Length: 70
Image (tube, rainbow, N blue to C red; front, side, top):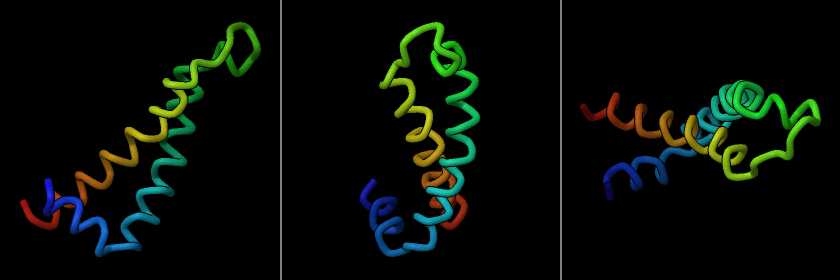
């Protein structure tokens, strides 16, 4: 786990790409998972909304680390 964190810390362009990916994929997931809340039928679930962006961000970072050092 420490090597993953050090790889991420030392590679700021990686964080930018991860953030861009999380914005695109997270928005798609948010629309799919929170459609009723977005159209006003039900209240939005904040935890699900935050996870919609955190999961793609973390998956991108982990995937980039395992691709560099399998």
